[in-house]
Image 1: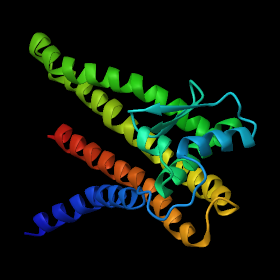
Image 2: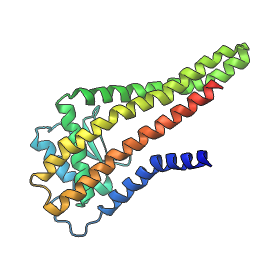
Image 3: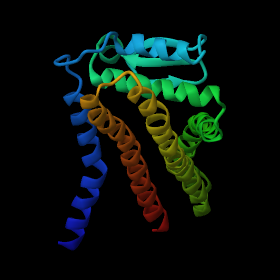
Length: 227
């Protein structure tokens, strides 16, 4: 019974924030009672030009809102790019916050970018090792080939966890040291400031949940490998 309760609490800690994030973003993603002069995409273009980032593009994407440091582009989903909701405005400012981090060559942002790129290769190599390890054990009859499984698990799960942990402070900075001060000085009225903070907190919690899920998966792999 104790294990069941602990498991349910763990699930709530991991999936609860994800549910709350979607609820908050949806709640403020309606046109009602909004007085913004432009859409999320137009605000992004305005902010980038305001800070001299003329070479950073603003694009519509189906892959989720994000800033692409390789192609120098703020990418927004169509509902954020084309609408004037508080969610659209706040998320657009947040992604522009990443462009500002990049332009300033902030160390933590640069580390996150390098780790994210390395993570792609680590995942590919780790997945290959996880696939190849049992085959090698069967072919060579050498149980120590299981070391490859451990290495593969670390590369897939451990590396992703490191990226998540480094990502969180980068996201918090983009939200509360970049986007929020900008929005609170001339872009939001008083009644919109508190909801905007909720949206930014919700965005940060996605990475908290991601890090916790990654930690859980890593622990599970460690438990499997100890057997």
